[in-house]
Length: 347
Ligand code: KG4
Ligand code: ZN
Image 1 (tube, protein in one colour):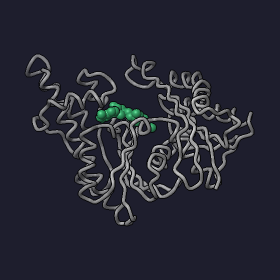
Image 2: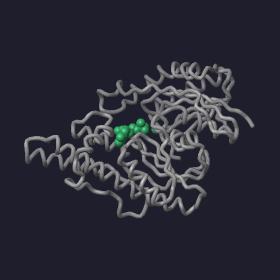
Image 3: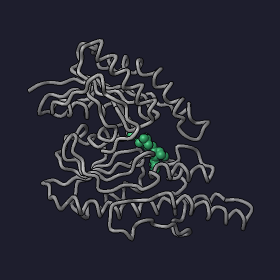
Image 4: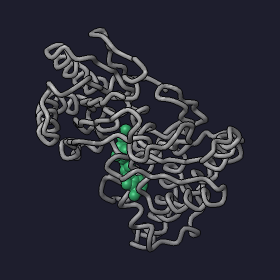
């Protein structure tokens, strides 16, 4: 058995992160440190992530994140077996910053380099946190992603379906913006929805008439805009209750759609009949209490384990990248100095 210690770097969106993960062959992995430097304030005035600002901030912060990850773990670069880095998909300037930093360290220290797909990082998180066996069903729901994957191995994923337009987090964020609620939209919409009536406004349930696992969320935003404008024309503005009812109706539509499409994905996955079937979720939207409750109930009905890793490992972080790199490294995968940063990279 071989103990492996990897440094992971993540810089594909608006979080600069470095982490160190160690695993003894056959034992569960251990997170020795995980440092995340968020850029939310840098982008808050622009209503979204500005790629150029993100890339500069990553380039500035990566080295201090690496330094902090090492010191938190009480290690030096000499203790590492390899460096894992997100090589895509994501905002290209940020991904390049991470890849350049990883190459620099690898070259200086003569360490092997392992490029990691950011989505594989999310998809392998349940193995990092709970050591679960393949195959399991994964639902990725964040501000940028929404897809169903059957994870069969560190580089073997079957995509069952996903959003054909917006990700659900994006829909929550746009809804919040349309209603004048603070960003990030997910938590604010969820909070408003708590005292709203989900039945007052009837939002569409896109693609539920199709038998596949694809989803669509951009129509919800259009519907919301129409409902809002109608209230504003009829009265003089939105009341607190109007806003709460709109949020509740919107959220109910998302919960309904996700639960029904997850039922389809689970049915396909259960056909493979693993010994202990598991549905795992990752991504910021997995924090939504209504979505979670819907998925928990569905899993109970279909006798499937439900697994939601701790939120700090569901959202962007480098521990998942170090771990995904470690799994790849164990299979013998190595990347050279020709490793490229990829803006698009489907699993
Ligand atoms: O995974 P994440 O931190 O970042 C990426 O998208 O990569 O996810 C952030 C997204 C945001 O769109 C945010 O509004 C959403 O997750 N979110 C939520 C909740 N908390 C965060 N959406 C719905 N309900 C929540 N409680
Ligand atoms: Zn992500």
